[in-house]
Image (cartoon, rainbow, N blue to C red):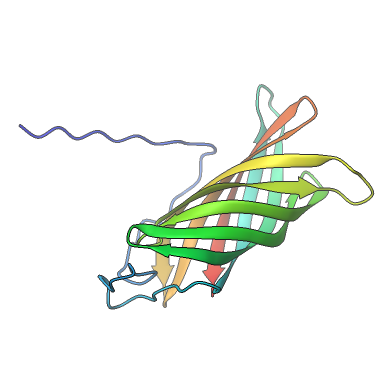
Length: 168
């Protein structure tokens, strides 16, 4: 008997690019010789190409964009630990700066999860963001991710989805 279970988290509807290729990040042991092996100290940048948000419990939605800079801090047999060292997020015209964070990346670079802290210019307030990302395509050696961010500002919760290009 075979039992298969699929669990998914849909934050926003998005036409998903489904072309998976053998490019991307390999395991420490080099299981995927067509990809790149990450080492400690390597920086990665996720830059949005398109994005949007919606407010939980309301009908408000709009455009979003952002960048995340991550640095590999640990290399393990089953993945990587990352420090989120910078970036920005624009939601509904408000710009947030990424000040710090931590994340984990799966062994083949398909899944990323973590959290980061945001601030706004001229404010002492800090906002914690939950993030999850999945590699959805690879085109000409460049991986693309859907990045989901959950941001709460005061009484408003924003669910943000970005299509981002990853660069090393």
